[in-house]
Length: 548
Image 1 (spheres, rainbow, N blue to C red):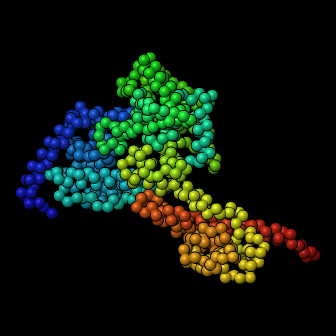
Image 2: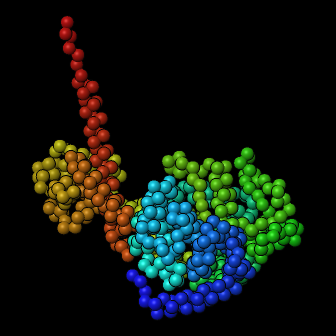
Image 3: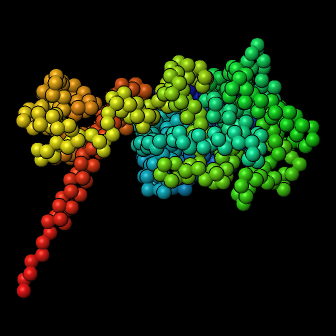
C-alpha cells in the first residue's frame, strides 16, 4: 500500500531528525566516528571482558547498505556482543540481495526476496538454532527501521519466525560425587594449583555469581563489618543498563568455610599487589582488578604443573570467562574425574553457578526470593528456569517422600502369581482378585492393591495415588501400557520444563514420570526373572531321545 504524499514528507522530516539524534548518540558510546567501520564502545566497557566484546565491525556489510546498518546498530539496545551477532546475520541477508538481486534498494525488498533467502537458509548446513537466530535478526532489522524512508512500506518478513528454536534438554548438573572430588582437589594444599585458580573456584562454587562478575572484582573488594566480611560483587546484567555496575554485597562470616574463602582472597590481594609492582601490564590490562596475573596454562605433560607463555613472560593480563573455562578443561583432563557412567566431567563456570542455586533450593531449603537476592535478579522469571530443569532432582524427591521399596524388592503379579509379598497377603489376594487399582493408557485393572486391611478395593479417584503407594502391585502383562503412559507424561514434562507459567503442570508431570519409571523397572526386572526361571526349568527338564 502506498502512503499519501503528505505522510511521506512528514516521514522524511522525522527520519532526518531521528538520524541526527542517533548519530549524536555516538558521544555516549565511544570515541569513534559514524564513518568508521570499527566501533569500540569504550565508554560502556566497565568490566573485565576483552575489547572485542565491546567492538562492532561493519567490514562484512556491503557498501550499499552500510549506512542503514549503522543506523540500525545505534537504534539497538542490549549487550554490544549481542548487537554484533545480529549485524553479522543481517550482513548475510544483505550479501544475498547483492548477489542474487543486483543490490536491490531496501525499499524495494518484498516478502518474495525474504522467502528466497529463507529457502537458501533452510538448505544450508547451519543448525536450526542458527537459522532461527538469523531470521530473527532480519525481522528485528526491518521492524526497528520501519519508519525510515529507505525501508519498505510493508514489512517483508513473516510475523512468526519459520524456524523453531531447539532448546537443549541435557542435564546441567553433575553428581555429588563429582563435586566432592573437585572440592577435595581444590582444598588439597599439596597440589601445585595456583592461588588465583583456587580463589576463582571457591568464589563460583560458594556463591551463585557469573564468572564476569567474579573476574571484575576490584582489588579492594573486601570490607569488614564486625565479625564478618562483606564481598562487594559487581553486577552488570541486572543493573538496569547503566554503564557502571551495581554492587551486590555478599556477607561472609569469618568462620569455617567462610574463613577459608576470605583468607584465600586476602592472599590473592597481596599477590596481585606484588605482581603489579613487579611486572608490566599489557596495553588493555586493568590493574584495579583482583584477577590480574601472569599468562599461564596447566601443563598436561605432568600432574598439576603450570607453564608460562614465553611470548608474555613479563606481561600481566586480566582473566576472562573463556580463559577460566579453558583452564577447567585442562585441569579436568589431568584430574580424570569421571561420573557414574565413566564419562570424563569437564565443568564450566556457569555449571557451578547453576549448581550453587540448585544446592540452595533443594538441600538448604532456600526460597526463590532468597535465591533472587543472592543472584541479583530483579524478578523471579529467570531463577525459576533453574528449578524447572532439575528433573532428576524432582524425581528423587518424589520417590523419597513416598519411601517406596527398591524396584528389585517390590512385588509384582504375572499370570495370576504374586511375587515378593508375604504368604498371608499373597494367599488373601489370590482368593479375591477384586483388589484392582486405577488405569494406565486407558485400561483399568492394571495393578493390585496389596493393602488387605483397609484401602478402597476399587482404587482412588486420583490417577497416580496408587502408583505412589508402596502397596501397589503392578501386573507385568500391562508393561506396554505403563510405557505408553510414560511416553505421554514425558512429553508433557519436556514441553513445560522451560515455561515458568506452567510450573504446576511441569511438577505434576515429573511426579508421574518418576513413579512410572519405577513401575516399568519393576516389570522389566520381573520379566527378566521369569525368563531366567523358565530357561533354568527347561534346562533342568531337558531329556534326550535315542532315535536309533
